[in-house]
Image 1: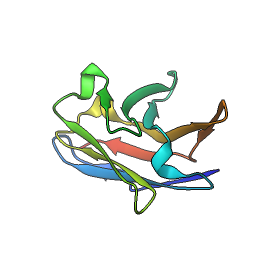
Image 2: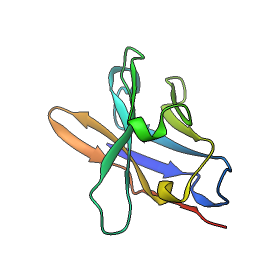
Image 3: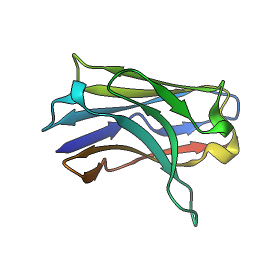
Image 4: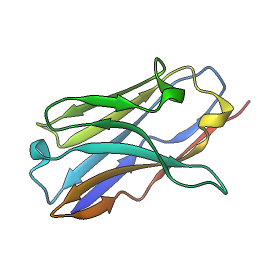
Length: 114
């Protein structure tokens, strides 16, 4: 299983950014996918999740600002981030599971700063 994340970068407060994750080695449409983030000195926390049936969940702090989506034809899960705040600065990781094992992408850094 490989998860390749991309799309991070530097953005000003109030700006937008989209991160994407391409999965391989799994039957993508059968797997729940999620985005986590880890800020310096903090634990890795779930940001948004999208189940194989399309059910979506967000952490309260990003509701109304972030949108998770999946494209099963492209084996891709996206996270559209709008109205970004400095506290959204973190390394963002995509995650899935298979046969009880957890798989992480390599992470992509999102920095929100003026």
